[in-house]
Length: 402
Image (cartoon, rainbow, N blue to C red; front, side, top):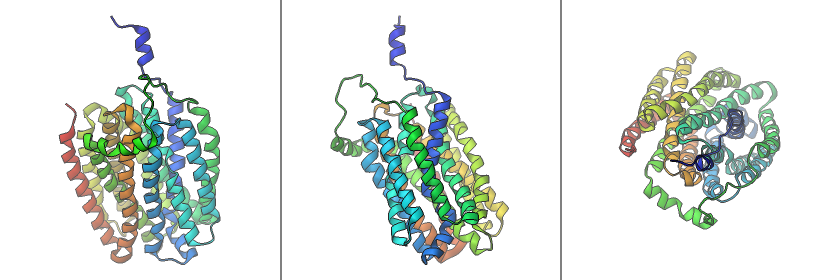
């Protein structure tokens, strides 16, 4: 007969739905900072006097710096109190956003954007923090809610960036980011635990160097984690390349930057689907669910060649691509978090570093492809990416846990 007291002590503490909602909103606010630039690439390029291909360096360096920050900083979450880390990272973002809002040269703007990316760790530390505090059967659902927060931040930043840029100038979007980071510096320490979780084994946590050296053995022992990261590198890269191309394409075809924001409002509807994607993954298996969602994304990109001059077709393509891409991310994270609970922060490190290397390369590649080959070029790039994702999803069925 089991000891009720023991069962109660070993059960993961429950995070209230209200706190989960706040953590998802915090992730949205933090991640939004890196994407205000997307609907504003045209006015920012005009003010600094640079080309469409050159302005693509801003999001590209931001994503690559984010990958570097994840690699060097996120593993600390397995050793240092997460509340302390999150506070430091948000303060770093505050100063980076302030510099972007005040910058008078393109070089300073790019440098501040890269610093911003380096400190954008919070949205990838919080999911590991939260999933350690729920039952295994709820990991997919909780991961879906946290992923919805990230997707919400990316999409709403386009709405806010586009509308603010249209009516108040592009710098106003970055001032909003400064204010939101100031608020989070106060809020997050209040809702996160003040002390590090107790270590039941009594073993001293690995030192920083050991944490970094352990990443490669983890990748070899859990190949489904780098596989998921590669899929997300392509999916997220497709997402970024498409939206950056839209930010260049629509103003050149007579639309204002606010139109990019309106499109993002429609795409933001997909945020509501992420928690359901997590439940679906919990029910049928995340590997199988990922194949279905990659097919949905593939349908969306096949619409793109016909959507260059048709906003309605573009809306449909965006919805399918965003829904499929965000749900693939939920499935991959659900697989990852179910494998080795004690090292979830390092698993997230591997996954997100691969993801943002792909995002950084694709950010520049998307703007350059559109600059030289137009809408047909970006559509072809998207189809190649989506076909690759589908192939990897089918391959990933072989890693399904028995």
